[in-house]
Image 1 (tube, rainbow, N blue to C red):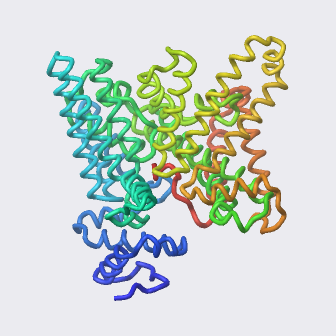
Image 2: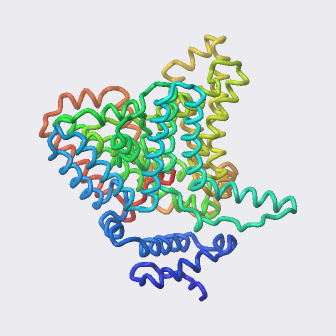
Image 3: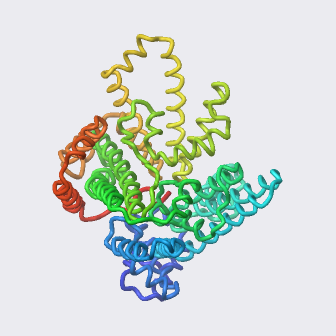
Length: 548
């Protein structure tokens, strides 16, 4: 049967027809997939998903229909969360294990609503990590403990590499063999062949840090399988972080929670802030950035620069918005997750940027990769090499693609240059004093933001389009289209974000908040929610970091 072009939307198609279309899609060659329009790729993915769900047991189909997308900003998630929270808090405080069981079951179904098979995989690997840790705690023989630790690490890395990196590495090997005339005896992977589990990079890092911490006796192996499953599966942080540490989270899991109105208020503040960032800023900036990044050859230089600025705002508001909502929902259940962002675009250098951006990842890379490699306890050459290795692997963590590897390498190079420059200026007090002055600090913040913004050009999987963007950005051309929307809205958003950052950084927000009457605060919450819904574009966007 020939594959119909254009592909039909899967909605309303019978299961037999979906299975036929999915089978036909699996026979497409990489060249045929590459020739498909982006919207047809999306339809093909939707057909594959619909066919997969049509073959699932009826119970999991029902779960999927209740929560079709595990996104915090959806109505389905609101109903899901309110139901879970109500049941959780109705259980008496003395029955803490029952509360934990409710959260584990809810978290499993949260993931199963996206992919039931992979929910069992995540749960199974978490159970094995629990057993490995118990085995480590059961022996005093250090070589045996080290072996068990590496068994746990390699198992988690093996699952990560199979799902996230096998397509990338096998395709690169195929091209290498073809280039040498040997030829590959297998077909290349296409985007339709690869299914990356939501959040796999996040919970893999959590499992690895747990194994290392148990080996180093920083934490004791958790004796309760139920509590350990909650550490890995806890749905607020499951799919996009923050990356939590076992020593912090498991203590909270064992501690019975009391209903606390102050904590509820804090949780709602975080949820509303994250919702506003996502709907009113990130999704609106996607309207400016996505069409230009998809076809940069069709736009002039000014449009490319403005779309890059919009993308910088989008990725910050998108990921920090998700983190805020994750922290907020966790607070509403009595848990405190780590802060993941601290106004990174006000950083005066790239090292400070990584102290403020994706803090749970940067500290993980520092503690479990950079320091074990030798950290700063060695000569300049080795230290800079350690930095480059850490950032290259950090880039690869974000995606199995050369563009993310380049992005990580650029940040590594900027960190090396910053360290060398900081050392050089120490012997030049006048220059150092000028750079530390208010005017010098403003200049350093602008330079840091400019460099970080340029690096975001590579923070997408299409490397060829990144090169086109950079070429047309610096080789000034007026040929091509302008931004799809009037750029006044973009500049208003830039000004709004900058003013908000300065108000918080200078302590004005805290001063105002402490003196705001409760009625006025409630009005502010309602205004924030209303603005988020009014400013959100009609077509919402998924969270960028869900794919990592």
